[in-house]
Length: 415
Ligand code: CTP
Image: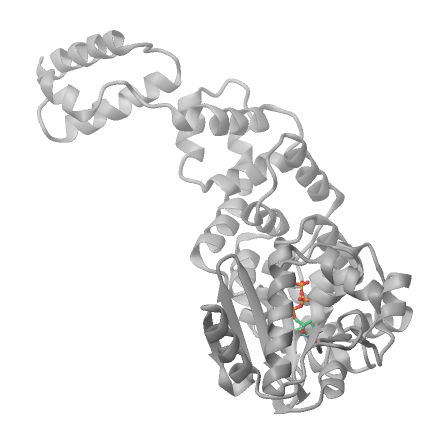
């Protein structure tokens, strides 16, 4: 079908078109059937950007990947037990997998995988819109295998699970459904939404690492706040970790951050997600998701700083006092807490700390103080600290003023 070739030619970046044609030739020459599948095909049909290729063969996927790597000078990373391989070329990547069928030994377990046909491979997938295959064979007219009517669901904007027990088999699909729906501006098909709501408890069968992976992928969406709002509405947040919540105020915080020209990054979004947890709940959240230490710190600091906001709600506080309370907290945590605050002294203090005071430092360094006659030892440290505080409070402006101050304090100390 000429239209479908036009779709491939115009929908993929030229280096991917060239690679697709190359692997198509190679597969035919070596006797492999080959299909474009999954997200790249879905996005191609939706005229959304496609950045990589996801291919399936009914032969040995890693073996075909090795042949491709040899032919193109690429590097291959194969996972033979799963029949998957990735070929990396400069700026490009292509996944090649052996077509497979899967069975789930029990809910939440990784599936047992067996080589299968392309139709079995499509039937094991999550949603109809991800369960199509474009046959890649020189000389034929780019036929679309669409046994589960994914193209119709793409047209109607529906996220539809392939069968009633799909979320029980693999509850990570609950998060996947939310992401696709919000990313693509789709809706959950009614039966799928009912099954999703019914099967929320199966999220308990998902390991911390797999659950974190889903949350991380959600944080990486271009508008994660939409996915979190929907996850809240569907009960997905509470089923993932009961006290977890998203609110219009958090959505507004993301909008405020975006409108200030700084995109809300994953760490800030995670901190927002966790912001209203108590410290013990935050520890529960950190272990439920097995958060790495950088992320755990942002979460811990966010909830800890929120507990100390009372101390900052005083318009007369000096910068050095704010610094003493706030400086030990992670930047993402301070930003998060500030974004969630209504206008008032605490917010002003945090914003001034973030934009100005955290960078404040005296002009004089330790070496300068030694040159002025300050001895090595505790006095040096405490004078440096005093200088910093005076700079923060605008009491010492300039190198000369700092020198005078140090000499005066030195005389006092000696006297
Ligand atoms: N898949 C599945 N069930 C899962 C994970 C993946 O059926 N729990 C299937 C889907 O067909 C999906 C494909 O494996 O399209 C590839 O997975 P992934 O890369 O996670 O999906 P994409 O659709 O490519 O994801 P995205 O667009 O979010 O990158």
